[in-house]
Length: 278
Image (cartoon, rainbow, N blue to C red):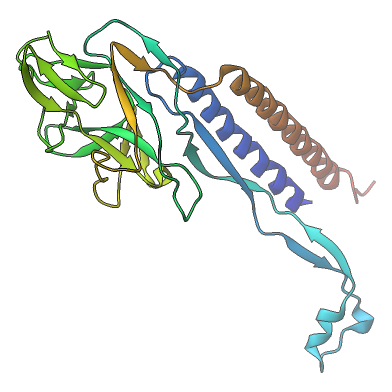
């Protein structure tokens, strides 16, 4: 009886985490460059139940246990293994702001090991020199004239330097080249993640690479992209699908909850009524 209780409880915990993931996606539906999370659910290893008949068990031949009639497999529950971001391109929205820059995917290589398409990112750096990657092109200019994210991360150029602008009147070409007047200021660096699933999502639209810095996509003949000034990439959250999945997760949680309540009532009877002396 307790095995079934544990199985239902694991289902409740898994659906609760799914609900938290889906509500977080909905909350970030209007966050520029946000990549929706997807849940990878897995079942715990199954057990094979066998019927043990004492008449057929011999102490001299312990291997006779293997000859007992099999009842069938027994599932021990489910768990959420990991959250995997969906790196699909979001819709492009025009804002008219010079500091808004959308990264539009073109041709991207496919990773031979996973069969998944690579992903492109802006390269940003904080005051401590830590490197992160983002798709959020909703940039701004800080008081010192540097191009930064709204959280203060510096946007880096092709040489790994912070981009300092002489004024707010600048132009970004489709290849990322920044010009002010007739002067070339810098070229925005774009990093390529051959297998984006190896990146760690940190929040605020930032991703971290624990396998060293990502290579630049500049000059890579297998990569094409375009930068569009005055546009931003919207979140790739599909609200209709997410709401449907959220309702499904709620129903699955309630179903497992009813099973737990049924087990609770059964155990209550077993403890308080079965075998009672009158």
